[in-house]
Amino acid sequence: MNIRDAVQSDPETMGGTPVFVGTRVPVQSLFHYIEGGETLDEFLRQFPSVTRKRAVTALDAARDTLLAGARSS
Image (cartoon, rainbow, N blue to C red):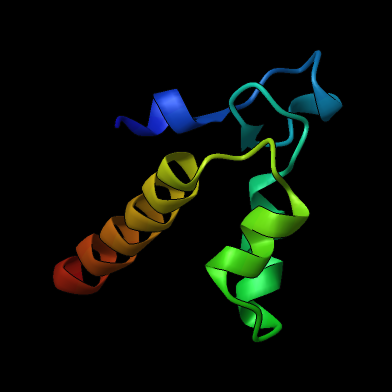
């Protein structure tokens, strides 16, 4: 899955905050859950409109961005 299939940012939806496609769930919520020690499964239980595939795609994109930045330093 492409990141554009998982995450969208539209000024008409929550003022442009990146959300999971088809939802009003901010992507930042996923990171808050993980930072707080919760699991991906718990996040998905709390936000059933977010698919596992979309959440994993967002995590993969964040990882890839971090690793790409670390390599260029």
